Amino acid sequence: MVVGRGVVVTADTRASGDHIYGEERKVYPVYLTKEGEEIDLAVVAGSGSSSLVKRSCELIKDRFLDFARQYGRDPNENEVRYLIEDIEGALMMRYYRLRELGVSEYANVLLATVTRDGKPMLYLFEPSGLANPMHEVPGYVVLGHGELTGARLLLTLLGYSPERSYHWDYSVLTAFIIDVVSMVDPTVSPLTDPMSSVYIRYDEEKGKVVMGPLTSDAFKNTKDSVQRRIEAVRLLWEAMEVAGEETILKSLQSLKEKALKKEASS
Image 1 (cartoon, helix red, strand yellow):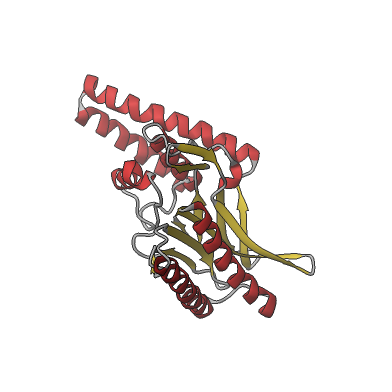
Image 2 (image 1 turned 90 degrees about the vertical axis):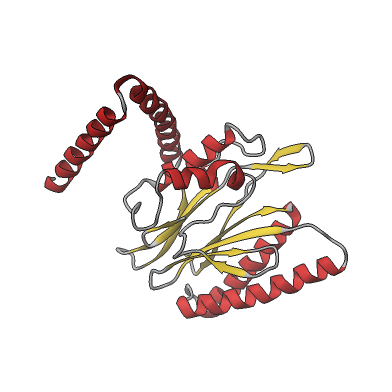
């Protein structure tokens, strides 16, 4: 999900197969340590065949690491596009060969990166291997079973867009979506691992791309916020049943306006 000059990638940890469920990390940060300094490059994730996702993520990781080893920095926008074309060609060839051998497994692979000049870029590599740019429209990618059981519905219901939602707390939003979907879909687990949520962004003060997971304290606060928002949605529905929609909407709008005025004056 694109957030300002960065991208948040969050996933549950449940790996599912035919009547088999297990726990597995699905988010892979890509970085290179050179001369004691970390060069943060990208975040990759995927859904589908576990082995195919891992191999595809490794291919993407290798391409970015090769670039960083050669140039000692993050790629700019044009260089990212060249990398995408290279990865796209390699994945298309790999998937084609597998289909020729009668292998019907598939993978959807997500790549999130930020250019050295601060442009967030988000791509979805489809089962064909083709790369679909998602950073401008719609500004997010939803993968796996959760896409069908509620994630897109929740984002639409909340009115998400990169422009409208710039000030939202994205760690809470992504955790909220995963936890709510997990309530109705046994193939999706609640968010339980801080390392399964990674934010890659351009740091204005440092003048470079930085990346990191939620800290333990931030993770706990996020989970607490998610629970309160679930309770708030239920309370909102009950309040409208008792007091009526117009009364509750006016009260909420008034609270929002007061909060915005207070924020503007501080």
